[in-house]
Length: 306
Image (tube, rainbow, N blue to C red; front, top):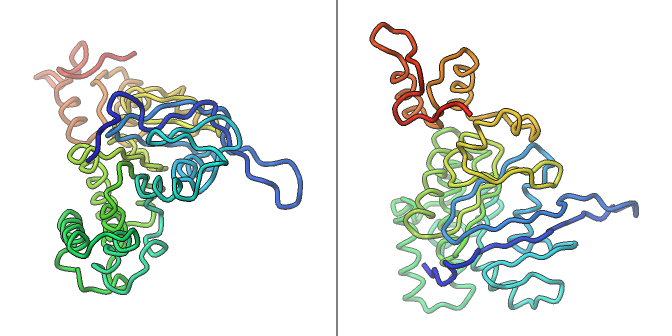
């Protein structure tokens, strides 16, 4: 993966705003308001907020489906302006892939391997390169045994892996997942989340997960919180989900494990703060002494209450 921009943000927004025009000719509807933030190469970021907070609008701006109304947006070193050429748009969309909520909207071929090959064929890669990329992406997404299957016969999770493989075949530097697990069962959701982590940690791909599922957001390196189109927080999952006041302002709830830790804290049992079942179980067990009563102070490895 090309990491030649490691010294600066891969995505940089400064006072970024976007308003949807009113089809009736009225005042435009402001969806994003003066958002300023940076996302580093290879970072795994979750963007959260209640419905109407501007999450999907932000994703579409990053993939050039929409253009900013005002402010500036730089993606992969290219400043997004109304004068950007069609060739630059196509190149940026190759570098910044997007996985949508419904994989049926992205799968266009009647056979899995043909769908994965569509992007490389479309940009004119030689047949031997296409074959190599398709085989590699099928292996990466555990789809090799399904290569000759019809996508319509696959499960939701398998279809989403096909959609991801099709984007990976273009060798993107950034992948945006826009509510990509919303239509999946828990097993499919877990698979796709594991793929997001792997793309970031093993392949150096910048991953942006637009999600309303806080348990998913907790797996990211950083959580960006939007409310009514405005950026209200950008911090680690631990800091975001241990702040009840912030979550109340944003209209979001903490992940289940974080909620349990916060409840225990209210009861006077400071077990620390966990975001996964394993981590939380260790903290809770470690906070009790041999007589079954709570110890004084946080569990080993846990954080004291702020």
